Amino acid sequence: MTYSAAPFHIITQNCRGLNAPEKRAHLLQDLKRRQVSIALLQETHLRDVDNHRLRNKHYHTTFHSNHPTARKAGVSILLNTNLQFTHSETVVDPNGRFLFVKGMISQKTYTLASVYAPNKSQAKFLCRTLLKLAAFTEGILVLGGDFNITLEPLSDSSTGHSSIAQAAIRRIRKTLQDLRLVDTWRTLHPDDRDYTYYSPLHSRYSRIDYIFIQQEGLTFLKKAAIRPTPWADHSESSIHLDSPLFRPTQKTWRINESLLLDTPIRTQIAEHLNQYFAENTTEDMSNITLWEAHKSVLRGHLIRIASRKKRENQQAMADLTAQIANLETLHKRSQMETHYRELLTARRQLTELIDRKHHRAIQRSKAFYYLHANKGGKMLARLIRGQQARAQVQAIRTSNGHLTHPPTSPPCLRAPADEPNARGITLGPLSGRITLVTNEIYMARGHAKQEPEVGGATLGGNNTLHPPQQH
Image (tube, rainbow, N blue to C red; front, top):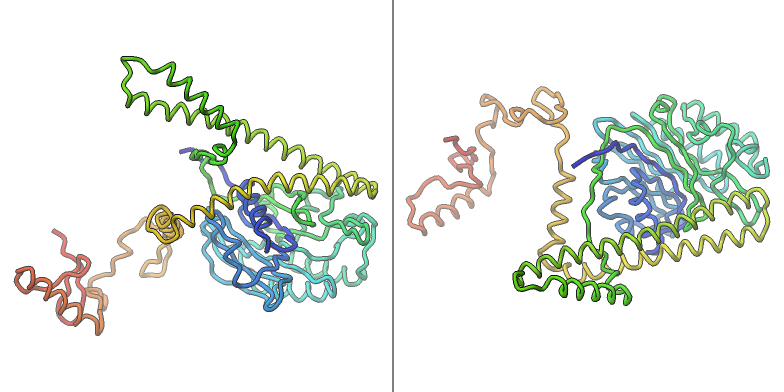
């Protein structure tokens, strides 16, 4: 299997609520398709009992900060399973306004922060939150969120001014400067104008969604972009950072069951199979060979049809995405109502196109859980496989306190013989029960009474478990 470099793809997105299954499907599918490593989300509107709904096999490690009583505010951090993130500490805001997470990726410490500022008293909230973050930060810091304020009104607002007092804006900029935090998009686009939010009430565009990193982390910064999000009212801000990770370039093919629900495609498949059997049914061809070979022929035919439909759907999505981007740029300049209505229509068409795909995925998921939820089979095997992958040992601490990277020193797992308790593991009060039961089993089978074995180790006197002898 071949591998390619996998940079950290980090995004921040104001979701405007994720209680609708379609919006969660939009988000998770988009993160998977674009191979996002870390997603910093704001305004999720989730409750604590709904946190599991924002998790799947591709983003199994998630952290959340929700409002305690109402479906409002809420921030989350989603981590790609391929990161093998080792969590160490978390700070959660009780009102669902900020979330700090600290951990290790490839033996490097990272601090991730997702912040959702209120639409009033932004300066007071942000300065207080940034000071808490400074005390919590360790290693490489990535801060993303919806600040609800333009830090540079002349370039980050379509009107050239802000409703927030200049003194409050200067106070926030001073705090960011003291913490050595740098606006990633403005660093790579010093003369450009782009925005992440449009307010229909004020007919104004503004850039209020940011991703900050510390100055010493700028050497890892490769790209920063603003991308329209059709299912949310905020655009997405994203960055790419260098990383030591790699990802496989090959994928496993799986049939698209929705093809079998399309009547014209079923007719085409039937005609193709009739042609195959008519051309290959001969006297010197056994029925077994004929039957087994038709599976490969049918698979190739389905791959061709699925590839064609996928190209058509991707082209339609690309055309609508480009149309949305052009209409946004046009509306940012003209502020005309007709352009805004055309923009909303294009967004609705793109959402409907994506919804059809997500509805099929939801139906397949419901059918799978209905068939396998109470059985031991493929579903259980996948869960166990995922647990094994997450339980991978990345480092081992030796008896003298040193870490091995990677753990290539098996002797550090064995304690020296002269250390206390090195010859046995005390079982406590259960040892008598184990001895009694195992002796009864041996006597019932006609064996002589001997020291029973538990898991390959010998249970001897003094309630200790001795390791098995090497022969």
